[in-house]
Length: 272
Image (cartoon, rainbow, N blue to C red):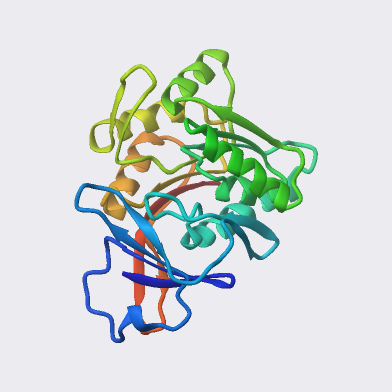
């Protein structure tokens, strides 16, 4: 379990990477608002211990987001991604400073509630935000508005693979691509997505919609268990011949115990 504070609300919920014993009794913490309990039948639910709003706001730098606990223990935000947001914003802002009149076009796939979308748009990028879940796309729009962004984002409710294939046919190109693919999934017509079978070919397809001198290509992996080197290898092979460098790394959050909670891996190609 991990004990975490989101603004004025404290939640206790499971985390698949926490396999060590806590140094204190987390359940005895006096200010817990809700605890998520897993069900033996799958899924689970929140036990409310102290009342709190159905949804509330949190902020990071000049970005604002809505937090809302959901049925499968999620809150609608992955704060560890702030490290990647900062990197992407720096790259976008540097590109805008070099050529202020040239738009920086970003494609965010499996874009969820739009953390990366909002970050890039706040720094001046034009973002196409694609996710198959209508509710998540609506929340992304809400996060953008909370952050003072009223233009520069195009929201698409669609299967990501199908959208990319259409963009290839249309000849549309992007300066940067972000993706946070799921481990498993099914498309609207029963198409099976299994990350170990599908990811590499999908990245190859995405490379076809990159501009000639791409700014960056970021792959995030949270629940998949893919090692950073796997992400680096995929990007290195898929973007072979492109000028730039690729790195991969664990993403984590520091804890009060003086250790780091691992929160997945990222691989990023940065163009030159």
